[in-house]
Length: 314
Length: 263
Image (cartoon, rainbow over all chains, first blue to last red; front, side):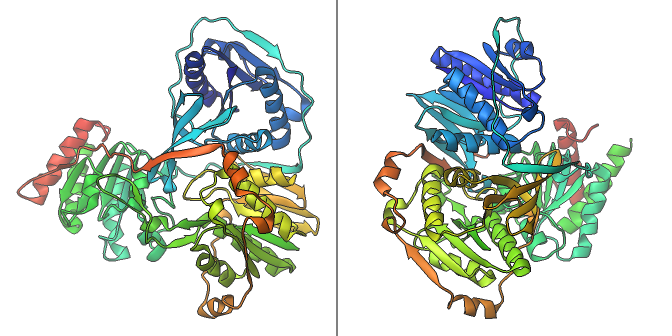
């Protein structure tokens, strides 16, 4: 009995060790980490692992689903874990689903909380496009869960002892042939990474009026976003924030002329401070916001831009 | 080539509301639609057919609304719809759902390609495609942003990963999941909606595809305990003032105090 963790992402791996340690202690069992390819197993021990399985093989030099899954299956054979945590990167998510299918067990994806209760693994995860939280239980062992980055805290490293074991592997061959890997050209900062976002809703009467928002964005160094109708129905912008669009987490989010539907709310849940400007004092956006100004955006926006210009120039 | 698109019937998330006191979702009376990413998988299937010929079949494990939902798939260009609907198969987990879909795909037979979205937009679980691939013993290509047939037996796809675009080639038959960026699904015309009503829809119950609902329930691996909207913990301060200028000044001061203006 043990807890086994794996992620190809170094930072996420440490976060998994933190949560893994907690679950292992709750079961009074060992925490094992799988390391595929290069890395520093001693570091994983410092962050909480009792044993580190190291797998090396020419087939593992580049990511491929089947070879990686077969190595993970080998680690499962060795460690016979009751819980397996995998980092929810795109590669991690396909690996976890494929592993769960191979083992014929369940999979809890993108968990934001995890605990053990009566031999079950209980997790919270987003559902309904991110507008609601589901509490789910994995009933069969080994329990498998994937965890997104920055959900669990990275533990403090400590001087600990642990075992490093070489995992003898003969990885399965990949079924798909990789013809080419193209590094992505980093596009300009997208909405997901923006620190400040100002966003438009149906309170804007014409597309030209978005100029008012652009002026505010310029002063704040903000990205501009919008609700679904502005993009999908009016076509004033290409992308929107909400359940079916971007999920954003800036430090400051200013919602202008936005009513605050469930759809939009799901996209802005994780924002730092939310400001709402809307002429309807009963608009739901005021329930979702930290600060609200009830007023006509055509008056409030120019005044706000002017006030910020004075403050931020000093 | 025969392409099967796996489509999930979900409630229209744009119309979903929550009970203000219990915070539970109110799904009754909400329109059902094809989950957006599955719709894009279907669009990709139709585009392959338009280029290379063959047929596109839409398959769904559904409920009472699914027949209506699948009309859109037929109107978009699917040649036929297959719906597995059985009281005993409602509310299965991803494990059970995949077993049912794999059995239905087996029954349809003679397929070259199976397409689905990378996840459904209601449960966001992202595992049915991979599970179906495993059950059918097929290669899986996840996160496809571009697809093309090299020939009858080989598919080339661009996989959209975080740091790289991975161009892969795979022998068919295979299962492929697509990302949002792959295409913009077409909007059916009135004519195509009329035509859709005359296209064949096959309804199957559990026994028709040889699955045992009780066994699937007994093998259940994941249980949903409850679902509710998160509590919104916000300050909800309405900034008062005699004039717009006064309100705005107070807001700017509050934002400086919060440390979000960088001054």
